[in-house]
Image (tube, rainbow, N blue to C red; front, side):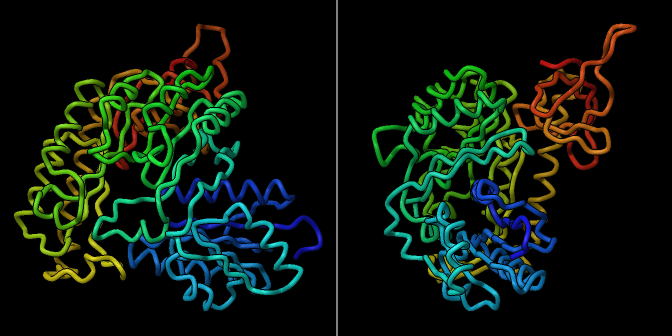
Length: 446
C-alpha cells in the first residue's frame, strides 16, 4: 500500500446492475478512506466486476484482471460478479488474483481487502448461488458525479431460459423490502437527486418472495416529495399486470420501458423457454403506447439461436418494426456451458449469426433515429448530467440523449440562469446528430 491515502480502482463489465453494484462498492471504499482513481492508473486495490453472459464477456473479464496485475503487481486484485460466481476456481488461478467474491457478500469486500493486507492469504468466498437466500443491501449508487441514483431492489432469477447462464450466476429471486427502498429513495431526494433508477436482474419478479410487487413499490415511490423521476429497468412482457400498467402511467414514472423480446418467432421462443409469444409482446407494447403517448419502448433480440431459420429471423425484423421500438440491443447467440441450449442440435454458424446481427443492428439504428426524429421541434425536460467543453449532456424522461450548448435565453440586460448538474432544464430539440443523440437549445430551468 502507498504510505499516504490508499487508492482503489474499478472496472465493470456487463449490465447496468453490475455498474450500479460497482458504484456502490466504490462508495464503500471511499467511506473507508480510499481515494478512487481511474482503472488505468496505479492503484493499491483493483476491483474487477465481471460478466459471463457471453464467451466474449468471459474473455474481456480475464483481460481486465490481467491488466490490473500488470498495472501494479503489488496491488490487491479483487474479482467479483457473475464470471467470478460461475468460474471461481478458474478466476482464482489467474496470476495476481487475491480475492474472489461472487454475486453475494459484496458488502464485505473492503473488510476482505483489509484482512488480506494483514494475512497475505488469498480469499475465495464463492459458494453455490442456489443457496443464496437473502437480498444483500448495498448503498444506492449515488455518487455526486452522477446526476441520477441507481437503486438495486432485486436480485436473482427463477426463469431459467434455455440459453441463459444468469440464474446460475445470480441464484434465486430475492427482493429488498418496500420500506427500505422508500426510506433510501426519500433520503436521496432530500440530497437533491431528482431521478432514481430501479434496477434488478429480474425486476418484474420484485416482491414475489414476500407479499409485494413492483406496482406497489412504484406507487409508494411516487409519493416521495422532491422525487421528480422514477425510471424502471427491464420488465418481461408477461409481467405487465393490470396493476403495473396502472402504476406506470403516473407522471413521475419515466415513459421509457425495456421489454425483452429475444425473438419474433414463436418456435424459437418456445425453444428458448420464454414465457410469452410474439402476439403477447405486441399486445403489451401497443397497450403501453396507447396509455402513454410518446413512450419509448426498447428491447433485446438474440439472433442465431439454435435452429433459427432465415424465416424465423425475418419474423424478428418484422415484429421490431411493427412494435415501433425506440431502440434495440442485438446479441448473436453465445452458447454457455451448463445451459440446455448449448447442447441443442442445429447450432448456427458464426458467420450466419454475425450477418444477422449486422442486419438487425442496421434496423436498430433506423428505429432509434425514427423515434428521435418524432421529437425534433418539441420542448422537453432534460436532466443536466455532464458538462464537457462547455456543453451539457443529459437525458429526457423518455431517455433521448441531448446535447445543449447555447446559453439559456434571457431578457435583454439579464444574466442567463446558471445550469447546475441535476437541474431539469427545458430544452428545445433541434436536430439529430450523426451518433443518434439530439442537439438542443436550453430555454429555462424547469
